[in-house]
Length: 191
Ligand SMILES: NC(=O)c1ccc[n+]([C@@H]2O[C@H](COP(=O)([O-])OP(=O)(O)OC[C@H]3O[C@@H](n4cnc5c(N)ncnc54)[C@H](OP(=O)(O)O)[C@@H]3O)[C@@H](O)[C@H]2O)c1
Image (cartoon, rainbow, N blue to C red):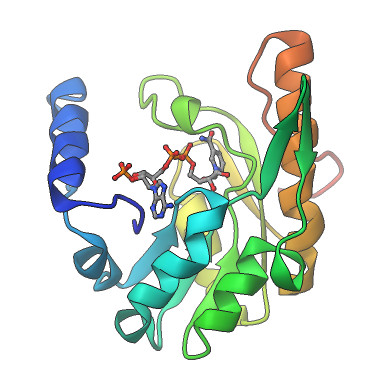
């Protein structure tokens, strides 16, 4: 997972997770961004305005690999969440532009992180995935399918990342209005 700006901070996070989930034998290791980018499958999980810069810094490590972009370009104006339009229409497309040798997929935008991290209470959610590279969609879907109660949905090409990312503003607004953490689930798609 590319995101933590220092190895020390990553160590702190990993120690905290291992302590919280003692007995689950978590196979996670801390690394700086170069170390994380050496993994087989990489998730870029920074705030939206740091995603392309972070990707560019480790571009050589990411060549030939699938990279998942999950960032949402949003701002809050008063009490309203509003989507922003990043260069090329989405964060995922901007990341793909700085990683011409990688296979970028957009995914995980709508999954609430805190609930996802609660291993004792899995959340039920669909995960919308789009990419210009079928192998990136496939690898991302395989990752999603490993998470209990999550269903990957192939939404087509990376151009669809624009509405997927901006729809997050709607979900956050619903969270505020109904004092909850919503997740996305579509009906009428066969399991
Ligand atoms: N939170 C959610 O429920 C959720 C759900 C779906 C998608 N997302 C998306 O996932 C991304 C991460 O969300 P989050 O809530 O985890 O954010 P976050 O806690 O603010 O940041 C995540 C990581 O990004 C690093 N970071 C912060 N600013 C950076 C910068 N300018 N450049 C490079 N790295 C930076 C931080 O490193 P340090 O630890 O070293 O400060 C931190 O490890 C966002 O784009 C968000 O839209 C979030």
